[in-house]
Length: 295
Image (cartoon, rainbow, N blue to C red; front, side, top):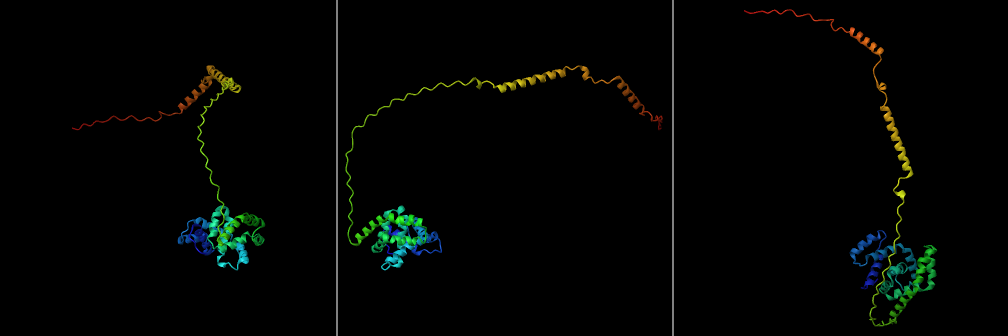
């Protein structure tokens, strides 16, 4: 692919170049990390998205490009197939996101004859059935209808407009441009502003008087009164029993023993004392001490 120096062609060149150089033995991130070290790329995230998605949809892109080569392969070099794969990917999967301006920039960065043949292939309704038949070998019918055929049908008028511009460029004609309508100058409305009307104050509604709280709020309930009565009765009963206990006659508290018991205790004590022999053994009196006078 020839490398033209402008914003879109530079970006498209790197999209195709990474697709040409990529090897499935390494991940896309590792490959692009090395690629970005060797090449100065402004929109690296877009290059990463293109490489990952083109690798993911490689079977679909290869199928559509192979059909194109079967129909127009005589005059198209096989080595340029990745150019058409990237264009197919942009049209089917990314045109809603990147916009028509980017697609035109990519298309104009390729040789006019090559991209002219490819766009003629995409807008030709006779080839849609062939694309559908081949894609059904890879995907479900619902996916083919919604994600491929419907997108091509949706952008067919846009692609035909680009194809018409390419025809005019190849034949040296300039497409007739529709000039926009001139802006009509309207005079400013410099009328005096209206006086500001002071709004009438709203009437503050009177608040209704609050109802006084019911008397029951500050009065004890029936259950509480009953409990207080029971508590008071129990207290009075306790005091009454205490007074009765304190007023018992003294003889109930008397602890003196009967005469018979006292006589028996006296006899027992006397018998015990008789059995004691405190004076049975008496010490002998000491002899008179002899005093010796030493002359």
